[in-house]
Amino acid sequence: MCGMNRRQALALLPAALAAASLGACADSGTGPAPVRWGKENCAYCGMIVDDPRFAAQVRGGPKGKVYKFDDLGDAILWMAKQSFSDDPATEFWVGDSDAGATPGKAGGWLDGRKAWYLSGRKSPMAHNFGAVSDQRDGSIDFAELRKTIIARGSPTQCATPAEGSS
Image (cartoon, one colour):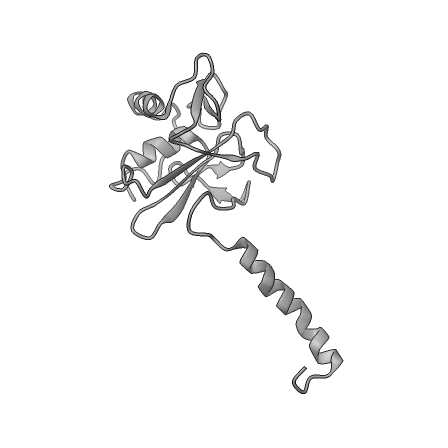
């Protein structure tokens, strides 16, 4: 290896493996980003994002930044205050509430604008809607969910540090 002995080459192996694995964690620039469950905070209320069934992500703005939320209702309230929320390039992803909560593992992401929503599901910030992939009795589409969440506002007494900011 270009003047290296076997010992020097083996010493570099851990660094090479670490560098190669970082590529697997890199953000692709589109779609939902990986979530460090139990270690990241909601962009709206500041609570920990730890339940994949109700989590949400928004990817948007001038740099396509990813914002993560502990409850899809918080994401909708936050998006309503953003200038880029209606931009077709803005992505909205929601956790599949049927996938089950597996600590440390997401059950799957659904396109939030194409998902269907069922009320009566106990969510972290008490918006109490869960996303599902198919239309069912009693489910509503994104437009109706958005209208409902905005009309109700935040159902908790949670302090919202990001309220009004981008």
